[in-house]
Image 1 (cartoon, one colour):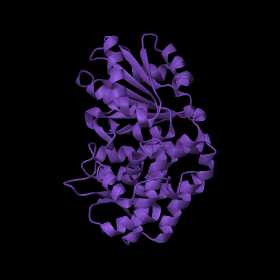
Image 2 (cartoon, one colour):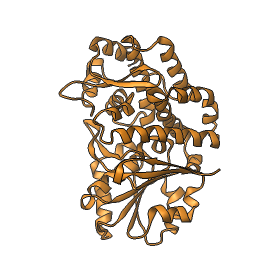
Image 3 (tube, rainbow, N blue to C red):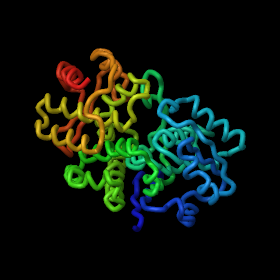
Length: 359
Protein backbone atom coordinates (compact mmCIF):
# COMPACT_ATOMS: atom_id res chain seq x y z
CA UNK A 1 0.00 0.00 0.00
CA UNK A 2 1.42 3.37 -0.95
CA UNK A 3 1.83 6.16 1.57
CA UNK A 4 -0.27 9.32 1.71
CA UNK A 5 1.22 12.76 2.39
CA UNK A 6 -0.85 15.67 3.65
CA UNK A 7 0.26 19.22 4.46
CA UNK A 8 -0.52 21.38 7.47
CA UNK A 9 -0.46 24.89 6.00
CA UNK A 10 0.96 27.34 8.54
CA UNK A 11 3.20 29.58 6.41
CA UNK A 12 6.82 29.16 7.57
CA UNK A 13 5.70 26.57 10.16
CA UNK A 14 4.02 24.30 7.59
CA UNK A 15 4.90 20.61 7.73
CA UNK A 16 3.99 17.28 6.14
CA UNK A 17 2.05 14.34 7.59
CA UNK A 18 3.06 11.05 5.98
CA UNK A 19 0.80 8.04 6.51
CA UNK A 20 1.52 4.48 5.41
CA UNK A 21 2.64 0.96 6.26
CA UNK A 22 6.27 0.28 7.12
CA UNK A 23 7.46 3.89 7.37
CA UNK A 24 9.83 3.07 10.25
CA UNK A 25 11.63 0.63 7.93
CA UNK A 26 12.06 3.23 5.17
CA UNK A 27 15.64 4.47 5.62
CA UNK A 28 15.38 7.11 2.90
CA UNK A 29 12.17 8.55 4.35
CA UNK A 30 13.63 8.69 7.86
CA UNK A 31 16.78 10.42 6.61
CA UNK A 32 14.68 12.91 4.67
CA UNK A 33 12.59 13.92 7.68
CA UNK A 34 14.94 13.43 10.61
CA UNK A 35 18.11 14.72 9.02
CA UNK A 36 21.52 14.73 10.70
CA UNK A 37 22.91 16.44 13.77
CA UNK A 38 22.08 15.80 17.40
CA UNK A 39 19.06 13.58 18.00
CA UNK A 40 17.19 12.57 21.16
CA UNK A 41 14.47 9.91 20.94
CA UNK A 42 11.88 10.17 23.72
CA UNK A 43 9.75 7.08 24.28
CA UNK A 44 8.23 5.05 27.11
CA UNK A 45 8.61 1.66 28.77
CA UNK A 46 5.88 0.07 26.63
CA UNK A 47 7.06 1.28 23.22
CA UNK A 48 10.83 1.01 23.75
CA UNK A 49 11.01 -2.82 23.57
CA UNK A 50 8.97 -2.79 20.35
CA UNK A 51 10.42 0.02 18.24
CA UNK A 52 13.32 1.87 19.90
CA UNK A 53 16.26 -0.37 18.98
CA UNK A 54 15.34 -0.70 15.28
CA UNK A 55 14.96 3.08 15.07
CA UNK A 56 18.27 3.75 16.87
CA UNK A 57 19.99 1.31 14.52
CA UNK A 58 19.16 3.71 11.69
CA UNK A 59 20.51 6.67 13.72
CA UNK A 60 23.76 5.45 15.36
CA UNK A 61 24.58 8.83 16.94
CA UNK A 62 21.18 9.37 18.53
CA UNK A 63 20.57 9.38 22.27
CA UNK A 64 17.37 8.18 23.89
CA UNK A 65 15.37 8.40 27.09
CA UNK A 66 12.70 5.97 28.25
CA UNK A 67 9.91 7.43 30.38
CA UNK A 68 7.27 5.64 32.47
CA UNK A 69 4.04 4.89 30.63
CA UNK A 70 0.69 6.38 31.65
CA UNK A 71 -1.34 9.57 31.80
CA UNK A 72 -0.47 9.92 35.49
CA UNK A 73 3.16 10.59 34.46
CA UNK A 74 2.25 13.46 32.14
CA UNK A 75 3.61 16.10 34.51
CA UNK A 76 6.44 18.58 34.93
CA UNK A 77 8.57 16.16 36.95
CA UNK A 78 8.68 13.76 34.00
CA UNK A 79 9.58 16.48 31.50
CA UNK A 80 12.40 17.47 33.85
CA UNK A 81 13.95 14.06 33.12
CA UNK A 82 14.00 14.92 29.40
CA UNK A 83 15.77 18.21 30.14
CA UNK A 84 18.34 16.38 32.29
CA UNK A 85 19.03 13.88 29.50
CA UNK A 86 19.51 16.68 26.98
CA UNK A 87 21.83 18.60 29.28
CA UNK A 88 23.82 15.55 30.32
CA UNK A 89 24.43 14.69 26.66
CA UNK A 90 25.26 18.34 25.89
CA UNK A 91 22.56 18.85 23.30
CA UNK A 92 22.58 22.31 21.73
CA UNK A 93 20.01 24.47 19.98
CA UNK A 94 20.35 22.54 16.71
CA UNK A 95 19.15 19.27 18.28
CA UNK A 96 16.03 17.41 17.14
CA UNK A 97 13.75 15.62 19.58
CA UNK A 98 11.82 12.61 18.26
CA UNK A 99 8.59 11.64 20.01
CA UNK A 100 8.15 7.87 19.64
CA UNK A 101 4.94 6.82 21.35
CA UNK A 102 1.39 7.83 22.09
CA UNK A 103 -0.16 11.15 22.98
CA UNK A 104 1.46 11.43 26.40
CA UNK A 105 4.95 10.99 24.95
CA UNK A 106 4.15 13.35 22.08
CA UNK A 107 2.76 16.08 24.32
CA UNK A 108 5.68 15.94 26.75
CA UNK A 109 8.33 15.74 24.02
CA UNK A 110 6.79 18.69 22.21
CA UNK A 111 6.67 20.69 25.45
CA UNK A 112 10.31 19.83 26.18
CA UNK A 113 11.22 20.91 22.63
CA UNK A 114 9.32 24.18 23.06
CA UNK A 115 11.23 24.96 26.26
CA UNK A 116 14.74 23.57 25.73
CA UNK A 117 17.04 26.47 24.87
CA UNK A 118 13.83 28.41 24.12
CA UNK A 119 12.76 26.11 21.32
CA UNK A 120 14.25 23.29 19.29
CA UNK A 121 13.03 21.13 16.41
CA UNK A 122 10.96 18.00 17.04
CA UNK A 123 9.33 15.22 15.04
CA UNK A 124 6.24 13.18 15.89
CA UNK A 125 6.24 9.41 15.31
CA UNK A 126 2.91 8.48 16.93
CA UNK A 127 2.33 4.80 17.68
CA UNK A 128 -1.27 4.88 18.96
CA UNK A 129 -4.36 5.58 16.90
CA UNK A 130 -5.39 8.44 19.18
CA UNK A 131 -2.02 10.16 18.74
CA UNK A 132 -2.02 9.51 14.99
CA UNK A 133 -5.37 11.19 14.37
CA UNK A 134 -5.22 13.91 17.01
CA UNK A 135 -2.43 14.86 19.38
CA UNK A 136 0.51 14.49 16.96
CA UNK A 137 -0.99 17.10 14.61
CA UNK A 138 -1.46 20.76 15.49
CA UNK A 139 1.39 21.69 17.82
CA UNK A 140 -0.44 21.62 21.16
CA UNK A 141 2.03 20.40 23.76
CA UNK A 142 1.93 20.27 27.53
CA UNK A 143 1.43 18.45 30.80
CA UNK A 144 -1.30 17.92 33.36
CA UNK A 145 -1.65 19.38 36.83
CA UNK A 146 -3.56 17.92 39.77
CA UNK A 147 -6.06 20.77 39.37
CA UNK A 148 -6.59 20.46 35.63
CA UNK A 149 -5.63 18.64 32.44
CA UNK A 150 -3.25 20.23 29.90
CA UNK A 151 -3.22 23.52 31.79
CA UNK A 152 0.57 23.93 31.41
CA UNK A 153 2.00 23.88 27.90
CA UNK A 154 2.94 25.67 24.70
CA UNK A 155 2.07 25.80 21.02
CA UNK A 156 5.07 24.31 19.22
CA UNK A 157 4.60 22.77 15.77
CA UNK A 158 6.52 19.63 14.78
CA UNK A 159 8.81 19.62 11.76
CA UNK A 160 6.95 16.57 10.43
CA UNK A 161 4.62 13.74 11.46
CA UNK A 162 5.37 10.16 10.41
CA UNK A 163 2.43 7.77 10.89
CA UNK A 164 3.40 4.12 10.44
CA UNK A 165 0.15 2.16 10.55
CA UNK A 166 2.11 -1.04 11.23
CA UNK A 167 2.59 0.16 14.81
CA UNK A 168 -1.13 -0.32 15.40
CA UNK A 169 -0.70 -4.10 15.12
CA UNK A 170 0.82 -4.16 18.61
CA UNK A 171 -1.68 -1.72 20.11
CA UNK A 172 -3.98 -3.31 22.75
CA UNK A 173 -7.67 -3.33 21.84
CA UNK A 174 -8.63 -0.87 24.57
CA UNK A 175 -6.04 1.66 23.38
CA UNK A 176 -7.13 1.21 19.78
CA UNK A 177 -10.80 1.73 20.65
CA UNK A 178 -9.88 4.86 22.62
CA UNK A 179 -8.35 6.25 19.44
CA UNK A 180 -11.57 5.64 17.53
CA UNK A 181 -13.25 8.23 19.77
CA UNK A 182 -11.16 10.96 18.16
CA UNK A 183 -11.87 9.57 14.68
CA UNK A 184 -15.61 9.71 15.38
CA UNK A 185 -15.17 13.26 16.68
CA UNK A 186 -14.22 14.56 13.23
CA UNK A 187 -17.43 13.21 11.74
CA UNK A 188 -19.44 14.89 14.47
CA UNK A 189 -17.79 18.31 14.39
CA UNK A 190 -17.18 19.06 10.72
CA UNK A 191 -17.60 16.11 8.35
CA UNK A 192 -21.10 14.60 8.19
CA UNK A 193 -20.18 12.46 5.17
CA UNK A 194 -17.30 10.95 7.14
CA UNK A 195 -19.69 10.18 10.01
CA UNK A 196 -21.91 8.20 7.61
CA UNK A 197 -18.80 6.45 6.24
CA UNK A 198 -17.83 5.50 9.80
CA UNK A 199 -21.28 4.08 10.46
CA UNK A 200 -20.87 1.93 7.33
CA UNK A 201 -17.28 0.88 8.06
CA UNK A 202 -17.03 0.60 11.85
CA UNK A 203 -16.86 -3.22 11.69
CA UNK A 204 -13.89 -3.06 9.30
CA UNK A 205 -12.22 -0.48 11.51
CA UNK A 206 -12.69 -2.69 14.55
CA UNK A 207 -11.07 -5.50 12.56
CA UNK A 208 -8.15 -3.12 11.73
CA UNK A 209 -8.56 -3.54 7.98
CA UNK A 210 -5.49 -1.71 6.66
CA UNK A 211 -7.12 0.03 3.70
CA UNK A 212 -10.07 1.25 5.77
CA UNK A 213 -7.79 2.25 8.63
CA UNK A 214 -5.43 4.25 6.44
CA UNK A 215 -8.37 6.11 4.91
CA UNK A 216 -9.83 6.91 8.35
CA UNK A 217 -6.49 8.22 9.62
CA UNK A 218 -5.92 10.32 6.50
CA UNK A 219 -9.46 11.77 6.57
CA UNK A 220 -9.10 12.58 10.28
CA UNK A 221 -5.72 14.26 9.80
CA UNK A 222 -7.04 16.20 6.80
CA UNK A 223 -9.93 17.53 8.89
CA UNK A 224 -7.65 18.49 11.76
CA UNK A 225 -5.12 20.12 9.44
CA UNK A 226 -7.82 22.36 7.97
CA UNK A 227 -9.01 23.49 11.40
CA UNK A 228 -5.46 24.09 12.66
CA UNK A 229 -4.55 26.07 9.53
CA UNK A 230 -7.57 28.30 10.13
CA UNK A 231 -6.83 28.87 13.82
CA UNK A 232 -3.38 27.72 14.96
CA UNK A 233 -3.55 29.00 18.55
CA UNK A 234 -7.17 28.22 19.35
CA UNK A 235 -8.43 31.77 19.34
CA UNK A 236 -11.73 30.68 17.81
CA UNK A 237 -12.79 27.82 15.54
CA UNK A 238 -10.04 25.41 16.64
CA UNK A 239 -11.85 24.91 19.94
CA UNK A 240 -14.42 22.72 18.11
CA UNK A 241 -11.71 20.02 18.20
CA UNK A 242 -12.49 19.80 21.91
CA UNK A 243 -15.96 18.31 21.49
CA UNK A 244 -16.60 16.24 24.62
CA UNK A 245 -13.27 17.19 26.14
CA UNK A 246 -14.62 19.52 28.83
CA UNK A 247 -16.80 16.72 30.18
CA UNK A 248 -14.10 14.11 29.63
CA UNK A 249 -11.31 16.11 31.24
CA UNK A 250 -13.48 16.63 34.34
CA UNK A 251 -13.93 12.85 34.62
CA UNK A 252 -10.20 12.27 34.15
CA UNK A 253 -9.33 14.86 36.79
CA UNK A 254 -11.92 13.50 39.24
CA UNK A 255 -10.48 9.99 38.86
CA UNK A 256 -6.84 11.19 38.91
CA UNK A 257 -6.32 9.89 35.35
CA UNK A 258 -6.37 6.29 36.64
CA UNK A 259 -9.81 4.95 35.61
CA UNK A 260 -10.32 5.71 31.94
CA UNK A 261 -8.06 6.28 28.98
CA UNK A 262 -8.26 9.76 27.47
CA UNK A 263 -10.17 8.54 24.41
CA UNK A 264 -12.68 6.71 26.58
CA UNK A 265 -13.35 9.89 28.55
CA UNK A 266 -13.66 11.92 25.32
CA UNK A 267 -16.08 9.41 23.80
CA UNK A 268 -18.33 9.57 26.83
CA UNK A 269 -17.92 13.34 26.98
CA UNK A 270 -19.15 13.61 23.39
CA UNK A 271 -22.32 11.75 24.37
CA UNK A 272 -22.94 14.32 27.11
CA UNK A 273 -22.21 17.24 24.76
CA UNK A 274 -24.74 15.87 22.28
CA UNK A 275 -27.26 15.22 25.03
CA UNK A 276 -27.02 18.86 26.11
CA UNK A 277 -27.32 19.93 22.46
CA UNK A 278 -30.53 17.92 22.25
CA UNK A 279 -31.90 19.40 25.49
CA UNK A 280 -31.19 22.86 24.04
CA UNK A 281 -33.25 21.98 20.97
CA UNK A 282 -30.26 22.07 18.64
CA UNK A 283 -30.18 18.46 17.43
CA UNK A 284 -32.73 15.67 17.18
CA UNK A 285 -32.96 12.71 19.53
CA UNK A 286 -32.26 10.50 16.52
CA UNK A 287 -28.88 12.20 16.01
CA UNK A 288 -27.96 11.55 19.64
CA UNK A 289 -28.97 7.90 19.24
CA UNK A 290 -26.82 7.56 16.10
CA UNK A 291 -23.81 8.99 17.91
CA UNK A 292 -24.30 6.73 20.93
CA UNK A 293 -24.70 3.76 18.59
CA UNK A 294 -21.43 4.50 16.77
CA UNK A 295 -19.52 5.16 20.01
CA UNK A 296 -20.81 1.89 21.47
CA UNK A 297 -19.94 0.02 18.25
CA UNK A 298 -16.38 1.31 18.65
CA UNK A 299 -16.20 -0.48 22.01
CA UNK A 300 -16.21 2.72 24.05
CA UNK A 301 -18.05 3.18 27.38
CA UNK A 302 -21.53 4.68 27.27
CA UNK A 303 -22.05 4.79 31.04
CA UNK A 304 -20.05 6.60 33.70
CA UNK A 305 -17.29 5.15 35.89
CA UNK A 306 -18.07 4.57 39.56
CA UNK A 307 -17.35 6.92 42.47
CA UNK A 308 -17.53 10.25 40.67
CA UNK A 309 -18.26 13.33 42.82
CA UNK A 310 -21.67 15.01 42.78
CA UNK A 311 -22.95 17.34 40.07
CA UNK A 312 -21.72 20.55 41.73
CA UNK A 313 -18.22 19.12 42.13
CA UNK A 314 -18.18 18.04 38.48
CA UNK A 315 -19.32 21.53 37.44
CA UNK A 316 -16.41 22.96 39.43
CA UNK A 317 -13.97 20.66 37.63
CA UNK A 318 -15.43 21.66 34.27
CA UNK A 319 -14.78 25.26 35.32
CA UNK A 320 -11.04 24.50 35.23
CA UNK A 321 -11.24 23.92 31.46
CA UNK A 322 -8.97 25.94 29.16
CA UNK A 323 -11.98 27.23 27.22
CA UNK A 324 -13.29 29.13 30.25
CA UNK A 325 -13.21 32.82 29.33
CA UNK A 326 -13.76 35.66 31.81
CA UNK A 327 -15.21 33.19 34.30
CA UNK A 328 -17.72 31.75 31.80
CA UNK A 329 -17.75 28.09 30.85
CA UNK A 330 -17.75 27.55 27.09
CA UNK A 331 -18.76 24.24 25.56
CA UNK A 332 -18.54 22.70 22.12
CA UNK A 333 -22.09 21.85 21.01
CA UNK A 334 -23.71 20.64 17.78
CA UNK A 335 -26.35 22.19 15.54
CA UNK A 336 -26.31 18.97 13.51
CA UNK A 337 -24.00 16.05 12.91
CA UNK A 338 -21.06 17.66 11.14
CA UNK A 339 -21.72 21.18 12.45
CA UNK A 340 -20.10 22.10 15.76
CA UNK A 341 -19.84 25.50 17.42
CA UNK A 342 -18.58 27.01 20.69
CA UNK A 343 -21.06 28.59 23.07
CA UNK A 344 -21.31 30.07 26.55
CA UNK A 345 -25.00 30.79 26.01
CA UNK A 346 -26.74 27.74 27.43
CA UNK A 347 -29.08 27.00 30.31
CA UNK A 348 -27.01 25.84 33.27
CA UNK A 349 -29.99 23.89 34.60
CA UNK A 350 -30.04 21.86 31.40
CA UNK A 351 -26.31 21.20 31.79
CA UNK A 352 -26.96 19.93 35.29
CA UNK A 353 -29.71 17.70 33.93
CA UNK A 354 -27.20 16.18 31.48
CA UNK A 355 -24.68 15.61 34.26
CA UNK A 356 -27.31 14.02 36.48
CA UNK A 357 -28.52 11.82 33.63
CA UNK A 358 -25.08 10.44 32.78
CA UNK A 359 -22.98 10.80 35.91
